[in-house]
Length: 309
Ligand SMILES: Cc1cc2nc3c(=O)[nH]c(=O)nc-3n(C[C@H](O)[C@H](O)[C@H](O)COP(=O)(O)OP(=O)(O)OC[C@H]3O[C@@H](n4cnc5c(N)ncnc54)[C@H](O)[C@@H]3O)c2cc1C
Image (cartoon, rainbow, N blue to C red; front, side, top):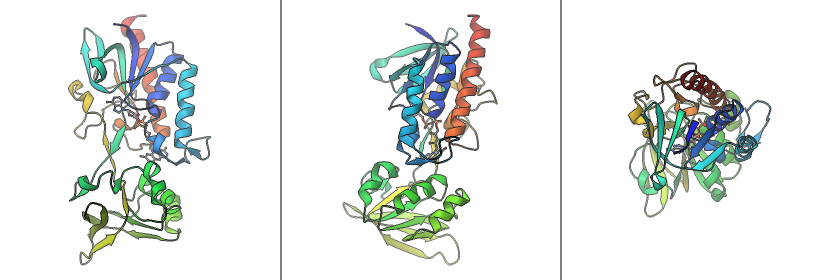
């Protein structure tokens, strides 16, 4: 079995940036992802806050990042990582496909997050069939429809602005008030055919074979309940770390995020974390890239000092 200096699990902005820094530090690098490189930005319409880019389509930025890794000959493979473990001072990365196992001197965990779900009545029934978690994937099919977005954070507001251009009516139902960037909130509030219901609890989705609407209740005043007919719902209510495959390493906190210090090092020597899956306050492309750069540099120092290459 070939032993790499570094294996990076996840090829979102964090993993790809880590691979660029690692390749430039002359490490042999393998980057693994169960999907195409790019992570969450592949399904993001416009990114407007990545320094120097102005406004850029997420998929386009993903392609540019991947091309950059390929200019440095970073090895990439499509693999679903199921476990990372230690054996004889090396990290073994175990994958679902063909039971493949790869060995490395160090590993960077950069598997990001996935959308959280509400867990209310009929959510599972209409998942993928009326309820979506991706406006870029499913928004175009909503032309002329009545659409509801659940959530009030940055993702909910950004995706609402995108959807409002397409749909007949857009209703935002959120647990608190809008908490996104004030500029984005102002833009959304000023749009035609947008209605916002803050301080609401979603009770259930209703319909027959097809989703017909959403039932929610005010958490303020008299607890007014509303049943709102709609064609489609998009949920943007937060994120869950995609870190189940790292459970046995013992480097996750109670919420499942990878615990790291300022060098992106976990408590396990040679195991580093980067991007949205680590404990931090701001989960954005630019912070994911910064984490990736730091993690790769720390991994390079670790490999130099531990394996005296
Ligand atoms: C709708 C939406 C809009 C957004 N808009 C913006 C914006 O405008 N500006 C901004 O800066 N940020 C935005 N973000 C946030 C930004 O996308 C993330 O902060 C960033 O993508 C995090 O990068 P990452 O590399 O840490 O993780 P991710 O992008 O999540 O990438 C993780 C990768 O790991 C892979 N992976 C997971 N588990 C495994 C496994 N077991 N085996 C192999 N591979 C695995 C995944 O397939 C994925 O490719 C947005 C996010 C969303 C959801």
